[in-house]
Image (cartoon, rainbow, N blue to C red; front, side, top):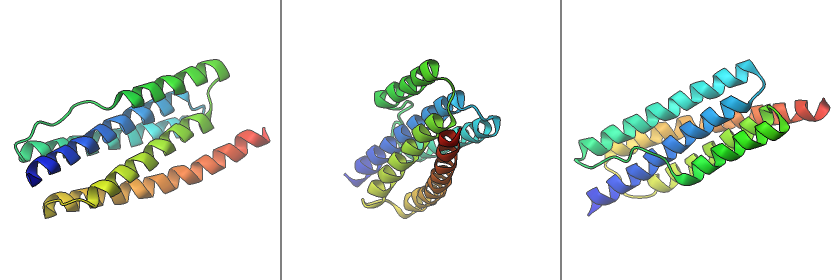
Length: 153
């Protein structure tokens, strides 16, 4: 029973990683700043690697890993693209979507860590959650900076 629950929890986090990857790529496509675009693409790559690592854990447990994210993330990506198409490129719009994804992912990881996990998997999730928290703080600071800059223009 615990094995099935652990695999389900890991698959939930794989979906979260795939969602965050897609949202960061969508955010990168709408920001005006080249430096910010590169940062968000790099973060998207990190999400992809996290998801790959979790999929490997599911396979290690003889489970079947999920390969895609949730439909809601696709809708958010479309919304970000549509907003940019209508209003133009915006650093704040891209950062807001990415920050939202980071916060949501951190919540998912915290919920997962409240459940039973084999120690090897708990260590992996804890390391990933710590990195996500650091990245969320950075995006929050950037969001404040870019929001202030866009208001003063």
